[in-house]
Length: 360
Length: 259
Ligand SMILES: Nc1ncnc2c1ncn2[C@@H]1O[C@H](COP(=O)(O)OP(=O)(O)OP(=O)(O)O)[C@@H](O)[C@H]1O
Ligand SMILES: [Mg+2]
Image 1 (tube, rainbow over the protein chains, first blue to last red):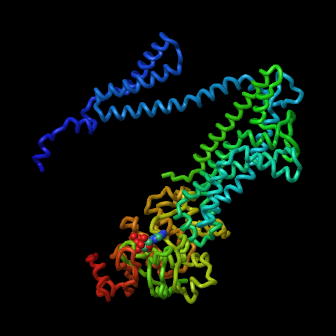
Image 2: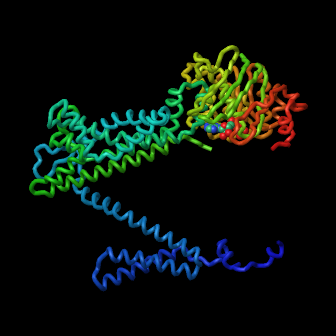
Image 3: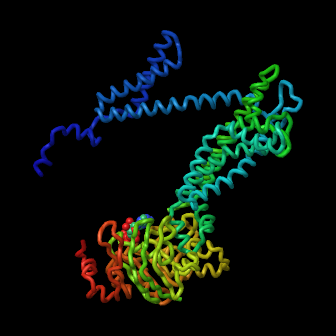
């Protein structure tokens, strides 16, 4: 044994490369430089021939990845080279995935900023032909209908999730889970038609009410709340429930005082993200709430305006000249994106501040 | 108020799996009963039937009779919640409530049950429980810190404090010292010796010396093979178990000549 240890075994160089101490490594800036050079070459070629950005980008990626691999292979050896290959492929994939997102945000911000003024937030469209006007009525409508949706969906969704995690067993549990899954996939227009048909039974055809929109959105939001809450409640360790039972605490008090407080961060995050999911829904609101030009804050009385539907009508029926309405549509879209982003930030803050403190 | 527990012919199931079979045992009040045996032989399972925690697991059920001072724990009129208030439990793994402070953890038994208690009384109860669990000196300056900020051993003592704060008649402890250093272990043993004046204590332990040191009676559980139910092989005064047990298996286990 000892002779084997002292004698350098065959392939010692490879082993040395493997433990990463004595080998040669490329400095960190090299891969970036390679990509830079690849970009220069690719854009150069494109400029000489017929310039298209997309082709140049594709050339850059292919050239950069291949060159990096070859360079690394010759300097660092095979294992590192494979590592670099995978790293660069993954990084490129990420960059490509970011392109639509960045360009979308850029487009909406640059176009929407034109009408991002006080008037947009302060006035409705009453008596507006052409310039000016705002979306005050649509903003209020979106806030009211989203609030109502939340008020309907959160209790129902949370209680369903609690039932599924804490009480349901066997067949019943499986079938509820199945139907919730099906509901998650319901096309939003179907939810809208459902709410419309439901209310048409009582109020006759052609009825438009804010509350109808809230019902339609609830059909979409409840399954999202159920799923996220279910996942979070399942994460609460059973030991905590048992600790509580062992103190002679009844099941319902255990759920209210131990399980829910432990899961509150995740529940809050889930609810917030579910709100973000429905706040920009257009189709169901189109058929249930309609649109108006005036401010209506009573969800039980007639049509209301909402931001997505507002954007839709401003874009599809802009009137003459169209520019003003189209600008308003983009600003409404910008507001919607800001709302969704804001809700996501809120979700993160909730999970940060309400998470159980380990505080070691 | 310590109470005696009589079990007769108790079978314990997880679904269709018979985990423990035919246990008949009398647990004396104001004494410590130790349960020993190899891993997986059903000590925890049996312990959990004594406060009806076993049935919390889906599909789990118990056959036979468990009688505590004349009250049938599995009778049709027995309420598991009431039983658990009388029979406290400390689990194998420490499980303080992560959302609660140290103080709230100790007060949890009363607070969660919605019992209204004056602040001063509660303070006193928390202090005496923490002193009882030998944790007071370590945490008295940070009672409002989260319970999960303590070390593993401290968390276990916190759980003991939480269990004795509701002043049960019987205290079940499932390997309470397996996460503790020798000093805390001794402290827990002293605590048990003190508590047995008032409570009936049943402790599961893998530590023979501990069983020999603290208990009056010892029960030895064993199983014949994998998938076989665990059985109570021998139940006798601790001195007898450790000096001349009735069963060969007990002697083998205790002397380490096992398997
Ligand atoms: N939740 C459960 N579901 C199904 N079977 C279980 C469950 N918990 C325990 N068992 C089984 O019951 C038997 C006894 O387990 P138990 O936990 O009581 O052992 P133990 O004596 O406490 O062991 P240890 O000393 O390792 O804690 C084992 O065969 C185990 O696999
Ligand atoms: Mg155990």
